[in-house]
Image 1: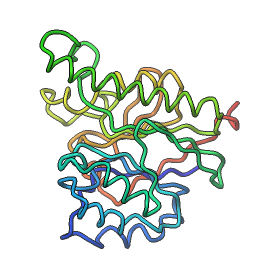
Image 2: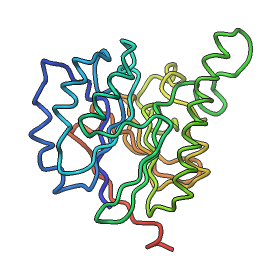
Image 3: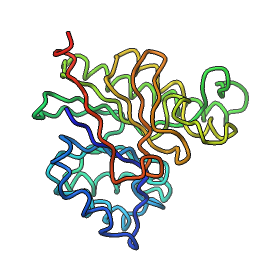
Image 4: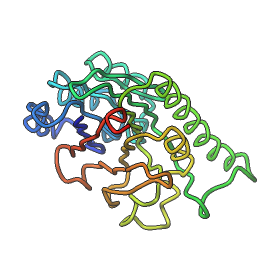
Length: 244
């Protein structure tokens, strides 16, 4: 099963049409395309129309989460609706199951949030503002857990977790350590390891590294376009049933 993925394309009117030539034949290289958020620059509906024009009508299914840039103008709901109308599945604490040539793929997705990683993370203590910050991440992680557990009961051949924020620090190498708490949270990784996903895909870390692994052994890939330096990266996954 071939999974293509990219994030942080940050599209606007001035780069309309630049990605499309590389996407028109994505089906020759992949069975599905995952978008790991930050599809727009400032989170406007006008920018989302560019995203729809670039990614709609491809020869593979397209599944996405939104990123922090896509929330900037408080139009995330309208952006999601526009992309859905264009045939792009947008996940937020939800999941989708796809019947592909290589088997059944389940994708669970959530934007996620920050907070940091084991030993160097924010805690749910003190001012209400700090509690709100951590509780937002806790809620996102719980939505991802619920979505993954729902997929687990459906027993697809392969399960992939799709987030914008990073679930591990390993794919943040290259980013200043001081901003790691704003790039992801270990709380996102816990449900990924509990379910035993075949792959976790995220974006957000433009100066990070592509490859990492969760504490539970799940491959994690940072597909921010400044990291992969291409229209998308492709990963080949073997169905769990074939490995049993």
